[in-house]
Length: 203
Image 1: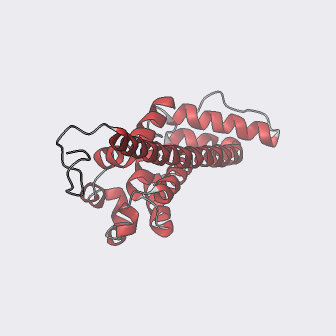
Image 2: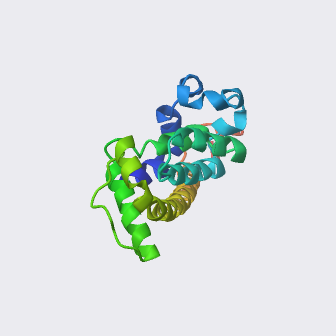
Image 3: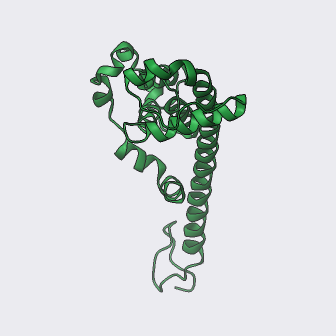
């Protein structure tokens, strides 16, 4: 988390523009075909504090949804809320074949604890056969736990981005102010013409 904060606080726009997917890449992604006609909206490609913070919320929330087409859901929400679409979609990739089992098993255990129900499985296998066999027992706790995890993760990500972005703005403002003060206090060289074209005093 500290490394991510360092990257965002040092160069958010430059870093994000370099690493986020380009419009052409996303427009050709088959999962986003249903919203392709809306991908030309300029607002969903802007990088500013509100759009990036909103995208962080959308992406992290959708990453915890135990349903298919997470990318499509994130894209629809990004278009509807005019948040940065690439970041919304990229954060969904947190859930992948390696991370899904532990993430959703944790969500299931959390949901079971919140609902005060017995835990019926000791691991989650995201295959269709396994889901058909166990969905009746884990469905409600999994959904509740996933929504809670998604909401907490989304709020945390949104607040983190807004704070990091604000820190970056303050740091840049202070750096510009310091450079201006250094230029003003720097001694002038003898015979050097001042910015207004007048010769230095005493010449």
